[in-house]
Length: 324
Image (tube, rainbow, N blue to C red; front, side, top):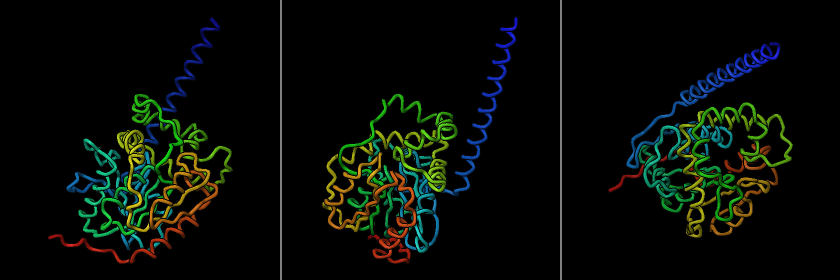
């Protein structure tokens, strides 16, 4: 009888714990959805289909291209960290992220064309472009396919041609995990130390309180993950591998700045260095430590990007050219 009573008590305690966890999950997911609404994104009809975007600041237009599990909100977070005054960030949600649908036959080249369509819809003739991580593939395609619309290209911890450092999980497993808000909420809430490696923090890296805050801010752009799943799967199994499809990097005509950490565990520094050597007008900023997120170097990166963009651009936004 005593064993039965203990069993009931344990079951009741477990039920109460699961209820608390579920209620916290619902609260945090609701807050994440409210943060998306506060981002004041818009969906604009373009010749390439609907594209979600948000803007920040005033000045010369800069496309902010997010990485995997991102969206316009991650682009805005990056813009706040990397852009100084005098620039207008245009942060689109790429194919399959949030309110930008994944079209049939999506490719990095088609995504680059969609960037041009977005500029057309916003009456912007020419823009610089800053791309992070998985966003680098389509940004490189934008520079190759639309040099008349691309003033300068900045690649931060970008995907680059060469051997990948990250092993891909089986696609059915990724399909299941990437569509589960609960799984990613559990990871970001109760397993943050494990998420550090997923976010590209090197093993053994001494994380400061500011580093933790920076990682948490980016981590906050993952939820809700379900409306980002199509884009994340596209990045992982289509877009990232496409970088090895023989892009003619030697034909890039625009000035390029590449910023990469030697200890990046997700995107190879050697690949980035080799890419710089192939692009005619490219410069590499090497960060010795800080991993994929370049932790601890925010001010330097912000200064380097600002100097590069100001050398390449006017601070006055340009109206779209008239096509005959």
